[in-house]
Length: 479
Image (cartoon, rainbow, N blue to C red; front, top):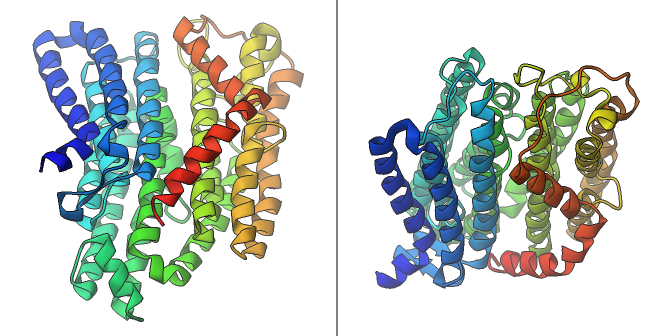
């Protein structure tokens, strides 16, 4: 048991830290918000440090319920990093013009959500999968409606809750079918059942499980909640939703596909290919008419999930490594974009979300415009930015996996997406200047934007060697 506790140390650190900080916030009240926020970032750093021991190489814990391997460790580093950024960005947003004060429950909810996401990517059993997913989801529902006086935020939380409950039901039904026809909830034993031959019940279970997971990663046709929730939720929460839970959902889907349903690859590959192409095309086409920058980034996230799924469709170690590399670059591009969105405030300090308001940003805030242009070009996959390398990695994995039509279709569809990214750049650099944004970024926000822009720029090529080794090691842990 001691070995199992050591392997799950990151989740223990997060859980104990969240409970302790909940008590601090209960006693300290509103005045403890700043302390609890920075203490939460320290807890996330502590959880990251805890990954250095058996938590990243220990193997199975708690009788196979939990997996402590390099794949889970890689995903957790991305999750903890994105969670920390979401906590750091919140105070300034809530301080000016949000209509609600930041309360100390906000960072505590993110810690609990991070603990759930850690369980998701380390799941070795369908029960661990479901417990982790529900812990993450319950915290997310509250975060979406965190601005109690804001109608859009309340609507976002309610939509997310209702549709999330439906998706959880679908997933649970799939889990019950898989358990009913395999007689087990352990991934390793489920793989044996799928390898034993065709079973209609197991096939239906596979379809329902992947449908439930597709909702969590906002893949078409289970994407319907994404634009409304991204637009209505507070911007730091939207930045969080677009990054950490996305990594957890995709990481979980990869582990289920490879470890639990590996022998049924030909069956789930059809579902993944459909979801990939539908997400890429729908995300690109639906984003063209958007006027709200948060809705644009919501459709962008749907579009990018499609590219990630191309890597998963390959079903190979190279494909999984490509998925992890793409997620790393995507997280940085997305968080960087949302930090720029946080700077969009009118003369009264109220948040502005229209794309048209970016007009003339290149003259009023040239550094901010350059950073946003870098993120947009990278999201469009234009070389020599790292977004191009990420797309190239998933296309290569598809080609080497024999999925030539999928790679070609993905490449052609990526051209559609380039339009709406370039439109944002065109508005910033070529449209007649509008009203300049008020205020300035805090030193922390400026540092984060600069680091993100440098990472996705050609400077980021310096990290490719180390990142390649790390993603390959993580992918190898599943095979």
